[in-house]
Length: 281
Image (cartoon, rainbow, N blue to C red; front, top):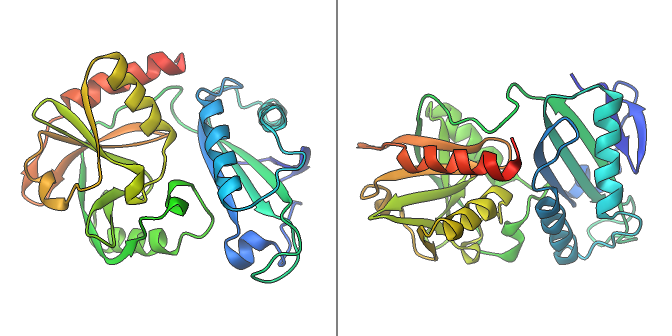
């Protein structure tokens, strides 16, 4: 249970804190967020999250003002200590443009909010049971630079999530307007085929995932052949040896089934061990 939140560097009891109805993330989806894992106050890959957040703010024409890496890290650590969350945690940092204006804002300066909650595991753990996945084809993600960041405007993903629940899937794969594979619901997607690791490129509109970045680094270090593709299509899943999805909270989740195809998880198991080494877990 979340006991405190941090707003602009100050701590407040979570039960007493409210966001106003004029909040621009609420009204217009005018915000960005980062979700990351920690073990107590140890936050692996924090700098990667910070870099993506600030690239997103630049694209969104947001002015950071007082918000910087040191303030965000120190605020998250204060929150962890205040709530005595010294095991596995989920940290969410949200930034949103200050109140005022309609579609055209009155200011480009931002507020930030941090939430920390406990999670079950102290490290990245591979799922015991593989995921059953399929594609979402009612709406498509734009192959735009805006898609590379976690933003508060998530109608497409909400609808995809509802579709996933209705079909009793464990995850669902998002396509762009060119019918190219982009990502999963809250994760990047990888396939392993003919000893080559392949993932959608950022030009498809996929999220520039922090765990995606870590896996690309590991592949380079371990001399695993790697390709970032602009043209992966759902049919490629049927000829792959492995499929897995990655995000900053879970590390890797392996996929067992797409339609009639079934997969193993040898590469997934290797990579999750390497991710934990990089994280210091």
